[in-house]
Length: 604
Ligand code: SF4
Image 1 (cartoon, rainbow, N blue to C red):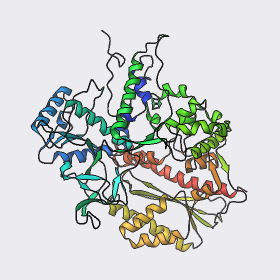
Image 2 (cartoon, rainbow, N blue to C red; image 1 turned 30 degrees about the vertical axis):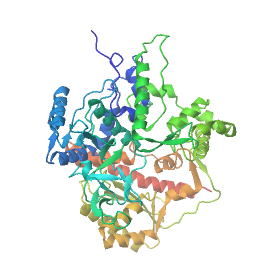
Image 3 (cartoon, rainbow, N blue to C red; image 1 turned 30 degrees about the horizontal axis):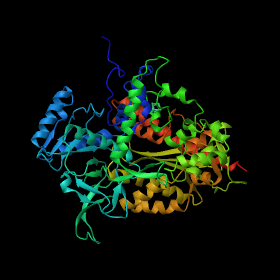
Image 4 (tube, rainbow, N blue to C red; image 1 turned 120 degrees about the horizontal axis):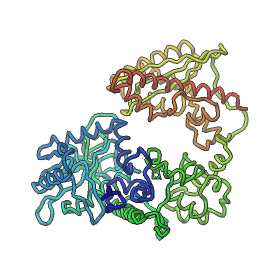
């Protein structure tokens, strides 16, 4: 008997399938589509893990699981990770029957009828079941923040990680679950359905927990009906506090989705409703794909590729790219991209490429388009913008001037370009400056970096900032007419935050000095230009001013992974190369700002 292929086996989807591109599922189960050589699996889980590891997410997750494992009454099954699946599953069953308070790294039984498999980071004991047996709730650990500030109190409940049971849940005074984290809700809904299939779910309203990287503190409500009641409050980012299990009520209708029948064109649905829909759809997609053998009578594939963020690290890209075509709207419009539904509706109306949309009669298109995309606010304006971008891209135009006449920019003999780099922990580890004396026409500028290639504490970060700002303040004092140029408010926001949190006089004085002498070139670009691909420094300095970075893949996220290599690389050579790569990248950024400024001054 030959090897069993996905097309031979029953459809069984993991917790990522419902929140990822359905074409991945389709390709995986379609025997007529071959995985590109060198790629493995259908890449959903792998790519996510790679991303998390890149940015230190694994460490946060391990630390959180360690904290759960240290609680009394916890059964930690991580040691069984390398054992046969049935061993870990039997151990999970024993722990459930024994009524453990927390089970770390459980292995849930496969739900064959529901076409589901997978396991959450932990199970937390909830309300016992009607038959008297222990009932459980799934809890997933994530390495990113799950909460955002909100002025209305008591919108969200959470349990401090030291007492993770829902019975210990407290309301939050100042935060709610982050808007835009629907995928995380659907992800835990998958585990709830698996628990139900096993008969292990807690009684009461279906719920699941997520432990993010948020930091909370215990407090009390100060006024209103809840005055004096114990609560939790979200701390500012980066400050110390406790982690918490944020509880998601899976049947509460909180997620806005398209609805053809609702008068507004959209409806709020619960996480379980959304999950069931997405999971069920992918099961159908997979079942259909499994029937394909390459015969003329094969059923049609149910979904066609649309470029989404995950395409960038998807092993199926070599299969999907030719199918989409180089001028596909979803491929080409990378700034304020249209969503999957918007693209699908346009395709159904015969608009696939930037050439199609760029030349479309929008007055004729909009009445047929808008009723189908009422899930989006501002759908008409989004389409108008996409059409403008399409026209530009189709004509090979990157930038359009939106004003006339010379572009006003302050001039000084000494001009300083400034750019910072931050680590995945959002600490500034590199302050880079380019100083140019314009009285010397051949002066290309001298680069001055202030850098620490090591993990930083708050005190380390402030000390490095003090060195950089002392140097800059002296330069600005020596040259009272000098100006400091940067691109976007990233530098000023970080400096202001650091000056505020460190209460450092040097930083406060430097901030005050720079506030009177800085120029944000991004604001200048925004005032005078529209960009087909946006107005990021990488785009405008390269396409308009002809600048090129020495690195093939310059970018803020990449520089964070280089910083990791620079500080934790396996050997000295790796670390040294990564250090140089970061420095070159930062130097090129400040040189790009300078080149862009020179170019702007030539624009009449
Ligand atoms: S390349 Fe993109 S469209 Fe194709 S399967 Fe991957 S994520 Fe989906």
